[in-house]
Image (spheres, helix red, strand yellow):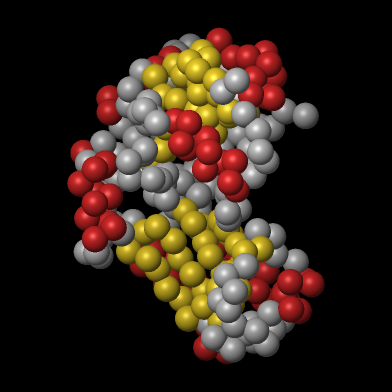
Length: 284
């Protein structure tokens, strides 16, 4: 079953309106969003904090509400900014954050309905639930259900939220080609049907996406070896992906805030068609 994307909605509404008007509406829809916040962008932390504090009594729930600010000066972030030179390439300023956390020092102190409502509110504000972290042994649970809730009613934990939509890359700052590493076993399927967004292969959960390397990773087999250490012991292939025509169609690409500094990554929520994909190299 095919999933409906924001692009599909735009095209459907555009078709209906154009049938009622004598002038084309293409340029109008290319420059405007149907929904401006929540579903298509992430609220900045100050506004998110105001909404959450107004809706919930965090002291009664037993948690502290914190954000990891990428503007704080530390060695990792200085290196990150220097290597990526991201400020001149993305559409938003530096007033954004890597992640938001709810830290429960003495366990979750509310009923299940309240905590799930809070998670849904965060999601509606553009912050998706990425996982529950056990702060004693750092186990990560990507899903949240009543059994997990009961396990952590009296145990210290952290709920982690990441922005649904990171900083959008300016089309002029993107290369014509980006790169993708995939298992050799799925090559035939990719060359037939393309690369579809998925949510697998990450330590924490995230919405379905297609991840690409912004530049060609020179030592891509080292990255493949890292994949082997965290997943199945299999062979990998390096793909080159032509994205310029996708950009011209209005498809958006976002900067991955958790990217490796030496191999910056971007992602899109749209599938990559097979005709845009070329196999560069593969392990035998």
